[in-house]
Image 1 (cartoon, rainbow, N blue to C red):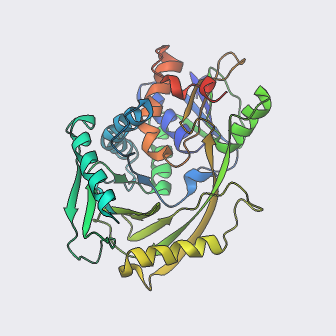
Image 2 (image 1 turned 90 degrees about the vertical axis):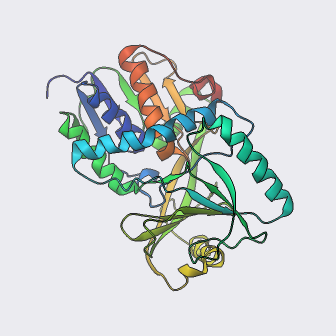
Length: 346
């Protein structure tokens, strides 16, 4: 490969998506991953692409909406270039309503979604039907949104690598020379490095644990029940996640908190009872102090940039993050929201 126009460090969802977007536009790209593709939280199992509630609108929610609406075309392009599946499908999401107050709020949010979601998706209150693939709802009513989608994290990462290479990009596992502008997309390790560089805490890692079950609901919507994501995947599995732990002894170990996820999932959706556990997963997710993605120049480092802080919404934000970062670094066009800038976490 000739000298790259752009180097990306980090083979997680942000790094891979930025590399694909740049390669798709014709740039010479080198992605360098120190350990393995998806070595951090991007190698997990959940893959829920779900929106924030349609109220108290802000730049983070607007950015996420744009990204979720871009997702089908983005992932279709990845599959077209690589010939590999990503597990993407926009099948919606169901959520139970546990009180009259929750029902009233959900109805109000449905009206808000009509305008905020630009009539491209719906947030509806619908009656439960008693189907096996539904969460129990004390009010007998459910939220059904049509914006939520799912993605198989590992399939998506593999397809992104294939797509980058199909466009002439280079993906290196190990070490290689970084030339041209450099985008650091190195997850929680990158946040710790930024903390040290700036002399203050702007982000940290949060441990998550999740489960993968053998249960085929591949054409059905995901569910969110009391903060728990229940996500059916294209390969006949269902992901259950996840915990959020600010303190831990071993970042990759699973424990009783992981088993508790299964208990909660079965209580919410009895159809999952008896499903075989295929995998218990644990990893560290990068969370910026601002709780929004952290995008833009690395302070004090000419020609170096950061794309980090995806936390729980990294897969959903990835298409828009990729677009904005490539616009900034290669074209000099700055569309980074003010709340996403590194300075917002200082």
